Length: 536
Image 1 (spheres, rainbow, N blue to C red):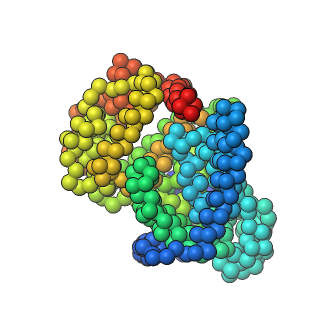
Image 2: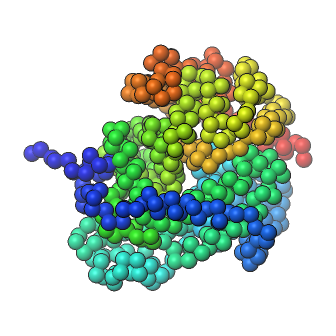
Image 3: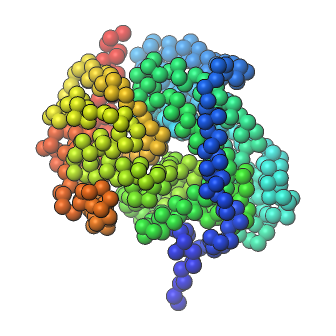
């Protein structure tokens, strides 16, 4: 018996067991999505405008909650850590107290915590692990509040719409919570329901954040490099768009279309319902599988977990560099690995969208890394807004020592390493470097994929993986890349020296697993920790 593929697989990368078929002409919520997205974006300047005075009550509330968290840590865990000579105790205590404070303060701070939770390798592990709890373990809204939103948005009593609706959510996060349900017509679905008061709270928080952000410039080096006002603007753009689930459903269709256009069937998107999508309610196909950290379960099912990470990386790079659209919030809570090894990619509230100029800049950045051309990479970063338009790129290369032999940080004295880091930050600030909004989403996703390697494929050879991905892009898109950026990857051999330099290893290192890389990072962390301890 021959199985027939669902008709909508030509429209998007969906599952092979459809609860309904996606017909673009029949999506009642989609007409006008482009104008709705533009209108939403036009709200941002007003939300982040410079104010003479902050929203007083909210600032007082935020100050009180954060002050209580920090003072409690100072009096208890900080002293314990010092007394026991265990700084990790101090960090864990502060992280837990901050997580609870963010949770109490609501959606905007929970979203900030979710972003921090994706920074494995960038932020302390205690902070990352604690803030992961903000992804889907936030206290849920009472069921009656959920019922009220669903009935108001869909215009009918819950019992008329659903045969069954689970009172307990599958997950509860910053903007919304998700419930399992069964439609009257029999389809198993999940229902994403927006928290009732979230829109008002988010707008007030953005006003407070936009008031304080300019005062952080130049005061904290890392904060200055990250550009706090731009970070607040990113919050505004993403969170305001997240408040309208019609835009999220539209993102789902667009990402699914990109995956279908590339022929990638290793990642699938849940189908949004053709009718039951509104500003505050999103009904979609229910997909299930192994949680992203269930490595034992996946291996027992015969799933190649290294192939899972590779597929995610390729899809992510294809979307960003070739189509200008990519999922902007990759983390373990947004992914299932299905029994056949395909990845069910969820939650499209944050989606990176690039105009043609920035898409080509991303493509040049990727090509510059492939052929180890630092100037091409810096030029791409300049075009993305990370450096001023008139930056002397040759001077940046010279001043940062990019053209010099690699120094292995594991062989450097802690004080020498700290001095070098401070000098790099100082030079970048002098050049006017900043972290543009779309690059923040891109880097955040890369940080997640970095962590995914640690979980799913710690022993794969990183150099071999990069070679595999570069070969894939060369063979499949070589002609297009050559026409768009003027460099033909088919005429340039992959040069891994740039990757070795980023890892701080010398050109003679031929292979390195993620486990090896983690060991190097841990060695550096321990030496820096010992250095700080001895200076006290």
